[in-house]
Length: 116
Length: 115
Image (cartoon, rainbow over all chains, first blue to last red; front, side, top):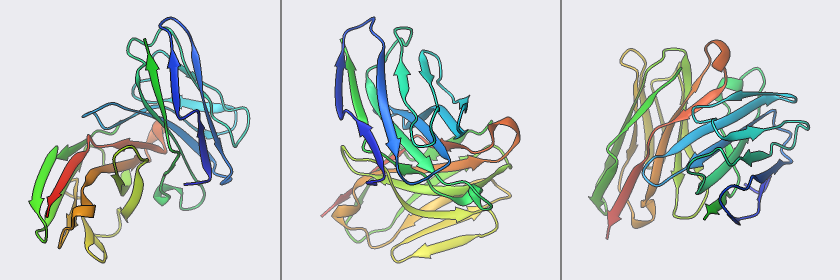
């Protein structure tokens, strides 16, 4: 979906360094999500945010941090505390409202992070 | 919280056959169930979804059924084509308690359609 931009597409870092993945959306969506994808393990939720200046931990939040200072931006920092950071990271957003429970996620193109 | 189980993990069919992927969810507070298709190296794309007040929904060759009592829902693809080959994910949106709005995915099914 052209409305969600993740950058960069590929990212390489040395072990022990923090790295921040960018996610920007111009869809005016309220909620934003970060998922991690590993082969054979599907999509696992790291963090999500339904409103500016608020966010909730997902299922695998340890070693990650986020911020939501602006509605359109939800950057993810992979810290050195994350044991296995090499993965494909997907950002997504969706609209909230009266029918928020049935609004689908729109995904960005993802960032492939490799830590050596 | 919600837990979504998806089966099978891999599915291989001949072109023209039907394919069925099944998911179960754990919490009755989930009430929206989308299905996504992800081609190699690309982002997941929504292909069909269903709300908890509906038992079945169809869109051309794709259909989804929902059994709220049993807490399971299924994706049905008829007359499969090689371009249907991809990874398919089911998901559930949880609307209970402090995890309101959390969308949990199944583990994915790798579908291969042989010409």
